[in-house]
Amino acid sequence: MTAQIIDGKAISKRLRIGFRERVVKLVSQGVTPGLAVICVGDNPASKVYVGNKIKACEECGVHSFHHGFPDSASEADVLSDIRKLNADHKIHGILVQLPLPPHIDVRKILEAISVDKDVDGFHLYNVGGLVVGNTIFPPCTPYGVQLLLETTGIDVIGKNVVVVGASNIVGKPMALMLLQKEATVTVCHAKTRDLAQHTIIADILIVAAGKPGLIVPQMVKQGAIVIDVGINRLPDGRIVGDVDFEGVKKKASWITPVPGGVGPMTVTMLIENTLRSAERALHLRKEDDYQEWEAPLLKLHQPDIH
Ligand code: GUN
Image (cartoon, rainbow, N blue to C red):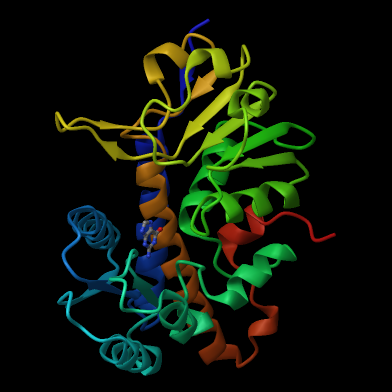
């Protein structure tokens, strides 16, 4: 068996065409969606990610505002910037690129972002929404994975889904979203003993560990669906995921490549959340009643609330 490829780049491209139409509609109603991206320090990987986010904004007609701070910036400097952005009507989404320098308390920063502009979905309010299956802004990477699975026609109900990695950004929200979709979810992490014992039972294996070559063919069930969230730069400059792609594709039924799998979807879902925020703001302005407002894409993909 050779796995079929889940092409995140192509799926992203299709979604972004739809986004441009939504932007045109918003602009015709007097709202240009705006995303503020705050970056502290000069982490090279963060610079690449932020560059990709800004490029995607340009592609879709979203205004981007890049706020770069030196590594020496204080927590108070960043908090003050966030407060201004919270009050700025041109801004519909605020993103603080992680990681932050160690002298800045990441939770304090994330909690300062208005929940109405929290397009990364990292504020505790949105995290809580995820727990009860009623979130405004699903975190972009797991949301992208969910859409990849849905677009490919892969149903997760009752499936054994194993998530490798338990980060706040990917692993934990991914597990919650899958649980809400009625999958049977196992979460493995750095302290998990005998990882292979868990991965081998996965109908769907989602790997977000940040370790190149972690998942080898012996750890994968024949016919499994493998989603590789890892993005690792090797000493020779190559970008690879956490999965031995060449080996595992001989056993899997579907697999995501790196690059070109989950990566583009993360950025695409950020734009989706920014548009949703702008549409929500417009509705609030017009109706003064956001209770009745329902996001178009979220309505499609939001699981039932139990
Ligand atoms: N750093 C790595 N991934 C992400 C992400 O999805 N959002 C933010 N803000 N920072 C990140």
